[in-house]
Figure 1 (spheres, helix red, strand yellow):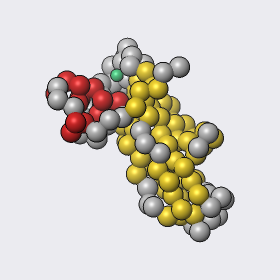
Figure 2: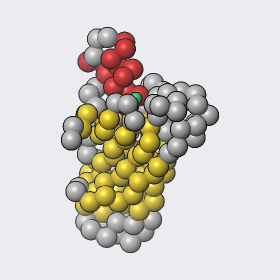
Figure 3: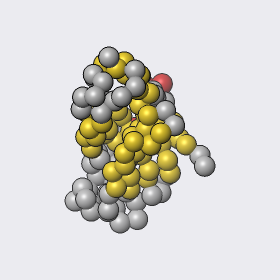
Length: 126
Ligand SMILES: [Fe+2]
């Protein structure tokens, strides 16, 4: 299995490559700290500056949220969910941390261009 990884697109020269990398990469947004036993919101958005197609043969079919090696949640999509127009898949996950640290990571799967991941985000839980 190959996992494609996000690279800072400001370091990429070709516009088409910037677009390709950005539109497939899952971006994870959450607070830097969480409280043990309390609900914690984690937003994952696929693409930051660019949008991905939503065609019948080419779409983002799932987004996963991981804590280290543990899969916490997954959101599945059918083609047409975003109106068959380019857009950014976006989902809010709510998790309840029970350990002292979270190592959150997101993946996104494109039906044509495979699995993509971004950097791990550490969250302190107190
Ligand atoms: Fe794609």
